[in-house]
Image (cartoon, rainbow, N blue to C red; front, side, top):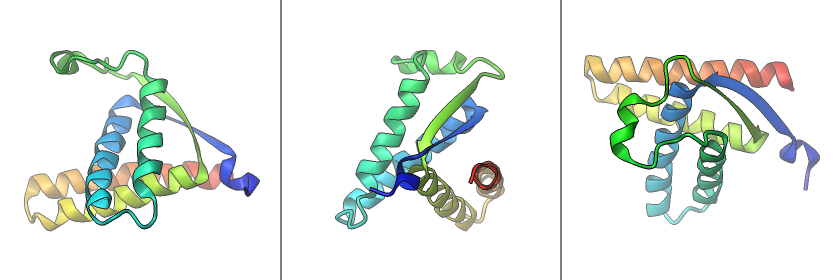
Amino acid sequence: MDPAATALHRIQMPVSHWLIIDATLDNEISVEGQDGDPNQTVELAINIRQAGWAALPDWPEDAAQLGSWPRPGQIVTMALTGPQWNLIVTALDRWAAVADSRGTSRGAEKAREIRTIAEQLRQHLAHQR
């Protein structure tokens, strides 16, 4: 395997951004799983989500606890491979377009938030390569 594909890139971000990434990957898994997953996106996305859960050991297991988590300003450092980060950025772009297509102010706001995270990731990755 190509060493560049297995090298870890560490990016620090607010946990609130990771939650958006996690939800986006959940959407990606649902859609790709329906289409037979020819690019093996599902397995990669599941691995990424599991890495996030491992990096956040205080992730609430009870949905009722999510209201007070994460604490304000909580940061996480994610260490993922280039292909994993590429999937995240691609998925964020895809779901930002979906949010925009709703034609609502809430959809446009969500799309801007998602695109901002994707752009920040691109910048971090460009500096690490």
